[in-house]
Every structure is written in C-alpha cells, then in structure tokens.
Length: 141
Length: 94
Image (cartoon, rainbow over all chains, first blue to last red; front, side, top):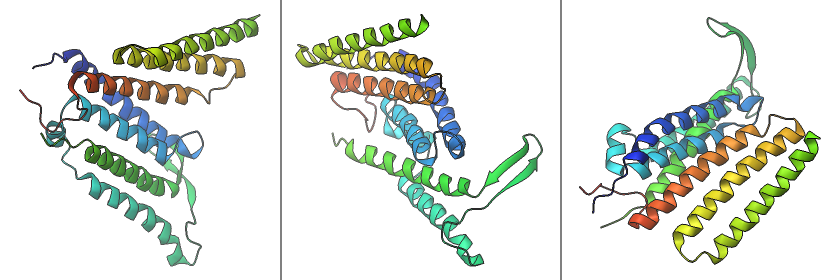
C-alpha cells in the first residue's frame, strides 16, 4: 500500500539542515561552552537517522556514498594521531597547544589543537552510531 | 510577582506531565501512548524554558534544542513503526 507522507518528506528537507547546522555549532562551541565532539556527533547522527527514516537506505546512500565503518576508523585514527604528535617533540601524550591567529574574516581567533582531537571524536561517534542503527534495522524481506 | 507566576507555571506543567503519564500507562491503544510521549516532551521543553528564566541563565537553551530534536525524531519513529512495522527500509516499495 502506498502511504502518503509528503508532509514528512517536505519538512525533513528543511529540518535536516537545521539539525546539521546545530550539530556543527555544538561541535565548534565545545571549548568554552556546553557541547563538544561527542554531543555534536550525536546530533549529526540524529540528523542522518531522520534522513534514513524518512527516505530509505538506498536513496540516502545514493546521495551520501560513505562507508560509515571507514568514517569511524578515520575518526579514531585522527584522534590518536593528533594525540601522539606531541610525543615527537618530547611532550606528554595528549599535550595540547593553542594560539591566537589573525584570520582574514574572523579577526583575532583562538585556535587550538583540541579541535582536531574533537573532530576525530565526532567522526567516530557519527560512524559508530549510524553503523549500529543500520545494523539493527536491517530488514531481510 | 513574576517569580510567583513562574513557579505556578512550573507546577502546572508538572501536573500536565503527570496526567500525560497516566495516559501513557492506561492508554488503550498504541497511538494514545505515542501522543502522550509527545505531550510529555513538549511540556518538558516548556518547563526547561521556564526554569531557565527563573535561574536567569542561558546554559539550558541548547538542552531545549536537543530535547526538541530527539522528541521529534522519536515521535516520527514510533509513528512509522505503528504504520509500517519497520523503521528504516532497505528499498522503498513503489
């Protein structure tokens, strides 16, 4: 039976971008405000879950052709590698550096090495959560 | 004055959530329970907003956004489970 879900599909096309924007904002503000890589990654994964629920798996994979297991592996590699780089300069593991840079548009901005680590955490969370959701929702029929 | 009004509104939201919990427990059919959970989510959002006004802080506003997103997604998931029996489809049949 064909189900009429045009309202859900139209709303999803708008709301997914709002959720993705909020996830990125939560990820970036994690250094000084509530947020961070883990919760930002969870919000991004919930946006992908909304896409998977509204459309089907093959349609979404046509638009986002990523293997999420590889994304989780890339995230773990990024986090561990950015943590291990200070050991080359005879510092402790997970030593973080930060500095103020004058960027063209944003003005004087404080950049930190934590951003790379948090990006790894966020990629890991997105990959693992989406992999779990796609695995437990596999229908064989 | 405004503090009294905010406290009364929090109490009223709590009563609304309690009534929705009663509907969640004794609800005769499954859509009743889904709507009760949606009502609980919306009232929780409003309660967090009022509590954030009472404390005079902005730290809870992201909680409102995340709770709204999760409530929306869970309502859609339950509705789709009731309607079709499967939440994420492999291939849309049409």
